[in-house]
Image 1 (cartoon, rainbow, N blue to C red):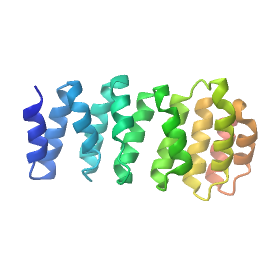
Image 2: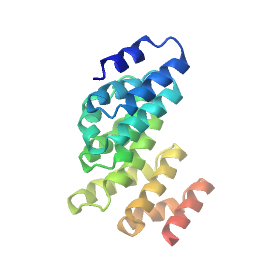
Image 3: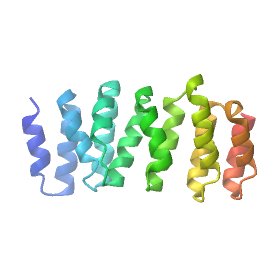
Length: 189
C-alpha cells in the first residue's frame, strides 16, 4: 500500500525530506506510484526530478501510457523529464508524441530531449516512418539552436547516418564547429 508514501511526498517540508519521500515512493516498486512520480517531475527540484525519473524508468513499458497521458502541458521542465523517461524506456508507442514535440514544442530543452528520444524509440527505423523522420530531421538541421542540431547528429548516429545521408551531409557543413565535428565522427563510425 503506497498511501503513506504518497502522503509523505505531499507533507515533505524541505527539499531533503521531499527527495527522501520520492526515493521511498520509487523504491516501493508499486505501479500505483507511477502517476505520483510523474507529478514529482514538476516540483522544481532537480534532485527530486532525477529520483522520480529513475523510479519511472525502472517500471519500463508499464510507465509509457501514464507518461503519455500525464505529460504536463504547462511546465516545460516537467515535460522534459517525461520526454527523457520515454526516451530511456525506448518504447515505440512514444514515437508520435516525440515527433510532435520535436516539431511543435516551444521549449528547446523539450525539443532536444524528444529528438534524442527518437534515436532510441525509432531504432530500427520503420519503413513507414522514414519519410516523416527525414522531413523532421531536415527541419532540425536548419534550426537556429545549435543544441537541436547537435542532438540531431546524436540521433542520426543512433539511427544510422546512412539512412539519412542528405541530412547528415547538411550537418557536416554546419556553421557550428562542434556540430560539424560530431557529424563527421558519426558518419565515420
